[in-house]
Length: 410
Image (cartoon, rainbow, N blue to C red; front, top):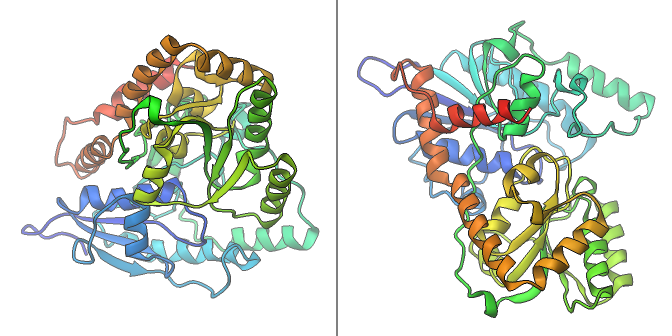
């Protein structure tokens, strides 16, 4: 699939859709294809779980089957999130290695894939095999997981041993793209330079006047332990105890049955002011979020946070942890908190001062412009053009500027 003198360059975008857990890498993969297919011959290398109609709706893209090619990697039939899924990684890795030399350039939409040749890797987080960042002492490195049973540890060691390693020094020979200045800064601490390209957030907000919005809070994301949904419930509980007449609407898909049961029980105990709305996508989600004045984001160790940007673009005022991606996205002292009491105190102050609301809304409008799909696509086009040698002196504006931001924030 290498290009000829009369053809477009060929690009392989690699993204394994192994489970039903949808998130930022899925959106990144779709916009990588959309951003590049007009300039290059693009092939999406993926798995049988890929459904173009669903992912167009989920990511806000408008791709057709004629815009790109698809190669389906072999997988082991098993339910989503079943223990067997750990074996899927090595299968995808080996398939990727076999195809990689057939493209002019290879792009991984989710962390590192060992192509055996130079590649571009879009980092979704810092939790990937061989990451050196845990030794950097970062507060945003995911917490150590509970110790697995011996048999399961042996199984995971076996899966890791099946990866087809090329021996390349990917950390220094490949191009690693950070999804936030915080990630780039953490990598810089261990000697790895990584430009920043913010993920695309394709959110079409519905304009709703502030006075017509509901004085309630919305929480958006996957319902999983890492999202710390109990914190949002506790914060709104404090607001209500202080006299605020507000509810908390929870929008998201449950991916952990035990945690989902825990949240449902907590909602039952708290009463009608905790409303479980279920998952929403596309235009339905945009219409729903536009109803609310306020939002709460509660994952403190998130490298970026696409759901937080969606909340900003919906026109509400979100409050989030003063760390990692949320601090970088919000960038305003009034919106950031470290503890539940601090969150409640700051929210009450904003709710009671209309002038402060106007200032925050203007600030958030400016922040929203940093996360457009147009900005992402132009950055990716420039990156690939530079890698292919078509634009010898071109560096992505986002990558260059945000890399300086990352280094300055150390």
